Length: 195
Picture 1 (cartoon, helix red, strand yellow):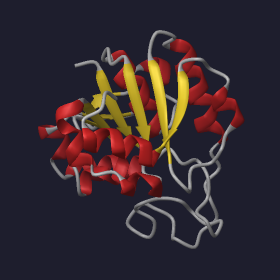
Picture 2 (tube, rainbow, N blue to C red):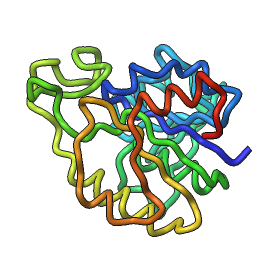
Picture 3 (spheres, rainbow, N blue to C red):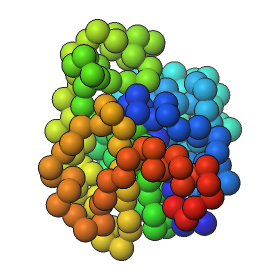
């Protein structure tokens, strides 16, 4: 199967039932996603959450990538070329490196909530900022996703956009990176239309 779904943790992702995607392609996720869903591949780059994931035993039983794996706990290193990238872009690059030719990016909001606060499904939980915190700077994620689009010109990247997804001009400069509304994506999944 050459389709993948990369799950960021922006709140627009909550509109999608990830269990419906299992039979449609590989699922890649980031950081806290493992708490309530087991993707085919998980990525975490921040040391505290990455170490917690490894020490929990998760990386011994599931595919997990991080920058500095703890020896003997099953984690895999991030590919050298993407070592300095953030979790979402790394997960996207891994899907492309795994040969997936159509990659849907869910929850890649890269902007604040409607009230201009921190936009993350896991806000207020361990290793995450409070829900009333200022939004995270996302310029590095934008640059990294632009570079990945250029690294894999034969791969189609689709950013699934919800009400809290930022409109980012730089991400519209590539023929192989398009944007669709989350409701269109959900309708296609629910009706069995070609993704």
